[in-house]
Image 1: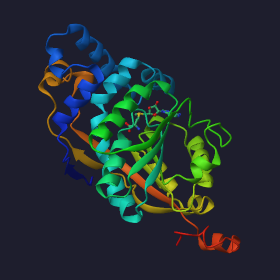
Image 2 (image 1 turned 120 degrees about the horizontal axis):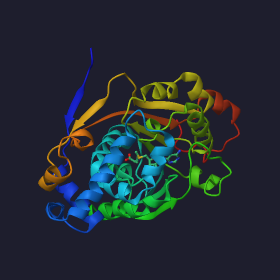
Image 3 (image 1 turned 180 degrees about the vertical axis):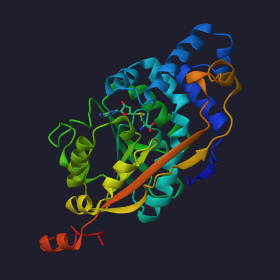
Image 4 (image 1 turned 30 degrees about the vertical axis):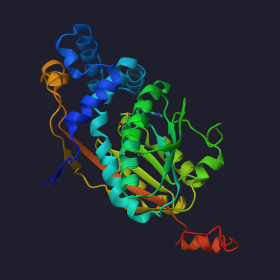
Length: 324
Ligand SMILES: C[S@@+](CC[C@H](N)C(=O)[O-])C[C@H]1O[C@@H](n2cnc3c(N)ncnc32)[C@H](O)[C@@H]1O
């Protein structure tokens, strides 16, 4: 029997979407009632975005869609508002209670696109007074997301979330990334507190590349760094492999928490602006409005195990600070 956990989103969806729409298009959603060119441009983009999530979408098609500026703009109200809350919940519940406050928290966000997961994560950290500023690196194979990432930074600032830095590291392909690439220097990774990967696995059909890449990251991460994986499609078999004892011990990782069963966690969302109903989400084919997010997650942690302590018994107290 399918088990479902349904939870209503506390965020006021309608106002949030209106705010984002205005930041992206410079007009309110009401403009859709009269501006035929805008309506048509957006409907074409929404149609393409929705095709990405069908099983027939190839990796080349997906890359082309994210390469299209109209599609990136539309992503901001089609998906972005629904992708903040999962990161907020996972980080609030499973990372925040295990972190100590510090002035700057450093986050690496992979396949971040416009980075709704940065907003969700930042809200969780700031609400709990865990830091004063964030230092962010976003890695994505599509360079054009920069404008949308600026919107994320702006929304964060409006919510009194501040950054020491917010870098967009370009041309980063998870499938082929190696430790030698220019932005992958040891210092960056060694300082990172949280590695975030949201909504990448459901776009990738190659587990081998993913696990090679994850081992590379784990090898560079500092002790106690968190790895947060969230996905919206049925990627739980990959998540289960990540929780495999052999994989974990080879890579010095442990499971903090996970939702890897065959059913998803669900968040229901409230209203959307009326003009979007009337003009974009008119109900047929690819134009059905999104009203819920289903997600799976795994949180891992880099942790010294007993055998590692033995092997590195010459480490000083400073090296081991904060380790259990
Ligand atoms: C569905 S979007 C997810 C964006 C954001 N993480 C979210 O949760 O809404 C997928 C992102 O992954 C990026 N992406 C897909 N394959 C990638 C790869 N092999 N390497 C790096 N980025 C990739 C795309 O450019 C896009 O920004």
